[in-house]
Amino acid sequence: MPELQRPKISAVITTYNEERNIGDCIESLLWCDEIVVVDSFSTDRTPEIAKSYEKVRFFQRPYYGSASQKNWAMDQTQYEWILIFDADERCTPELQAEIEALLASGPKYEAYTIKRRVYFMDRVIRFSGWQHDRVVRLVKRGAGRYPNRRVHADMQTRGPAPVLKNPMLHFMIESFEQYLPRIIKYGFWGAAQGWKTGRRSGFLEVFGRSTWRFIRMYVFQLGFLDGMAGLVFCMLQAFGTYLKWAILWEWRVNAARGRMPNLPPFDEDEKVWEWKAGEENAEEQKANG
Image (cartoon, rainbow, N blue to C red):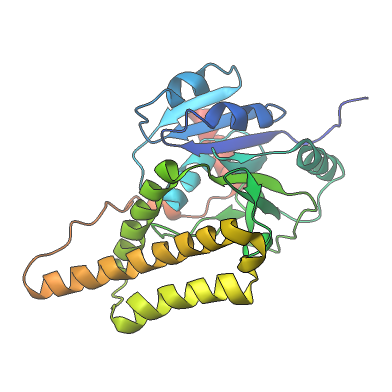
């Protein structure tokens, strides 16, 4: 079968201590023309594994949140189209074929949304609202940027981003040992985002938001149809919401007592957040060798 003639594409992967995932993620993206891995100074074998692949261009950078890391990573790429993945995600052969055919045909749009099939301990989550999980991950250089948020930042595009047919795979939770520290981190980061923007927290936030999230996911979004896995999954998500608002409440209480919170660092580099024209970014990459 002749190779499709398409524009070159750069894959981006952001990582931290992903030795269990990074190899499989890279393997699923070897069809791309380069793979840019941006690591947050992992302490496991993630760097060693990533650098063992010839197509990988490996960088390390402090972590200021997913949005900052992905924006910075996009600025390191060389090619016209950018495909963004996390280390716990996989590109399927069907998604690869769809993307290559799309680019070879001359795409009508500058950005595309990809559905995610979410796995909880090797079981697909069919309900709880996650069956509709989708993210903008295929973008032409200069046509999309993540907003300045520490957590839960969705890419903004300068035009429509239609949804592709085939999903990526998202191995979201393999074990509690692996996932609970992530929930705690996201709770702190979400609270920090709320603190930075002046949000308050009280009974309605701590109890109301976490309770409503569980009821919405488990009852109204049919999480109960996933059985015991659905129950545990929905409660984990509600727990993450509880942590965010409880931490923010604690910070406000202690601030009134003169004890200010120790916030995680935010990325204050304006270049990370500014939109860049494709031609300018390409020239910058050439200048940097």
